[in-house]
Image (cartoon, rainbow, N blue to C red):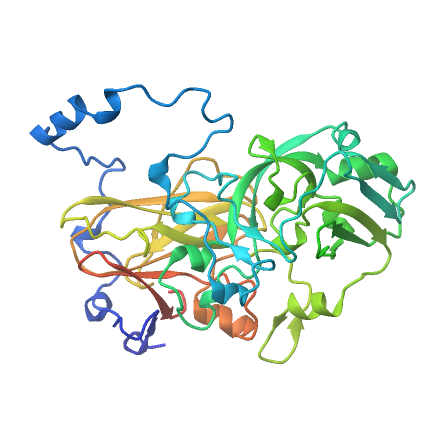
Length: 443
């Protein structure tokens, strides 16, 4: 495609994309003002009289604070009142029992989502299960059918691992054109946590699995049940039956007392309020499951078993909720984001400042774990000129995050699921940030 014929779609008809003529004049390098500087930001300023007054005369330092015993279970600061999950009625069609509550990933720190902010997706409301009455049945093509209480389940050797969970519809709000100028509603159907439980393989090694077992049915005890079928190969790999999340018991909205965690695979398979696992030599696919979680291609054929969440990334700062409107020309700033892949580990992440004409490798920061969020960072000096920011992740089996055109050419636009194309932010000269679509293949 000719550079001059690129098609940029804005999230709103009232927002005109910035002219990109200057960007097209660039070759293999960026202008001097955009070249990365030191890897350490230095926003320090001289002490002012107002600062001294704040430090020496703070109200909260003149009286006793809350009693240590006031909150037996800790609560966030009241100043963090905007740090909450959100839902849009358009996403639920008015049904508050079968809907999703979005994680605000732009406020996430590190790679662990607090339990109170972890995204939720229910099909029949949040169930409240009495742990004393909890039972987990494992039966079918196994050598010994069993029913476990919670205490009996916890007697198996436990493991603790960090994984993300992502709804297959994450990004669906943007699949045809920008609809929200809001990262939380665009990519908030995912979160990452440290999970504690037992590997399913450990239990199957104990009770024995029949040689002809091919499929596993997982069913919850909530109003919907959410029965889902999973290949035995995955059950014997890394699936966990978990009771702990981030150092505490699961919360009701996350499946208390027990749920499945199916690392790297689409979130609807991670059955909550787990009550039954049945093994069989044939699948139980319902019509709804078969038709809903597929990828219809332009040829009319569908990719039927589309379980793995593909390599993905998004820039979380800046974003529409965190613009650069307080920056001045010449300020150093950190571009930061999240990358993840259901296939394995993130190998590297590139970012572009000009809509894909040029790419620079970002730095990975913190822990880099398989099937977990990975943070990336790039530090630059902003010269006040408009930018088109995007990221491109690559995992350890060399899957490359596609552009919108590359994705739609492969799987079409009929399905809202597994949308992992690049997300592009337009940063204006005033530091405002808008969601736009860039119609272009990678250089």
